[in-house]
Length: 350
Image (cartoon, rainbow, N blue to C red; front, side, top):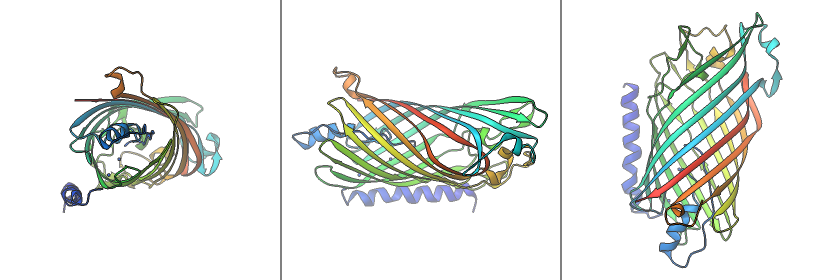
């Protein structure tokens, strides 16, 4: 069976479970942004206030509503690790022609969400990526590579499978799909760039997942497991490794319009299967498919705000989150991540 046929079958199975789950009333891409609800006197008001409790990637409890969002993400990497230990560029150049010295990745993502019911939300995302990587060669020269363009388009459904009447505890299932719209043929001076500089996976990716949302008084908490599973090899003869993420968060309501949060995320990325025949792994570590995986534990703090009291501004929220890994174990030599940042704006309308 072809990879895309397999992907279609898996997606159909995930989607087909939603109607059956609907009979058992009970409730997400990128990241989770939990915030705290304001206490309410009735369920209708509570459904409105829970917009403040949910991560930015969730839109549950707002049946027949639309939400538009924009997110800017930034990730910086410099210095290299082999396992958990530092390895210098000089040591890398003993075995390779070039060594990466630093890299930055920027993401501009547009999101459109629709809450079909209070328990079912649908989402589409369109990312635009900008990547830059600097190198040092064995001859002592430095050069920079840069790519930019559309990444892989994402489609996702979120469904509440369990919820207490007061919404103190909820469980949400996730069914996600990424389409291979990002380029895997980026070049510089006619030569194919390494794996981290490409803009997409080149294959369909599935993101089945589950999340738990909890709240009490001025506090909120939650957890989410969201893997990204690659389906089949791409046209260049390889498959990116599966990506497993487990996130835990805690939030404190500060006042009627603002909340503070803390989050940890454990991540495991597998190495690439297969290889691009145009990339020589002897050139540099970033062209070796067996040196692209690793484990990481991130710690981030966030702050979100409703910008005003007018009817229009009350339907908007702005969220800022910054952090860095507290632990990394990389299949190196590989650049280590040193900073993570994200700014998210969302507007609920109609």
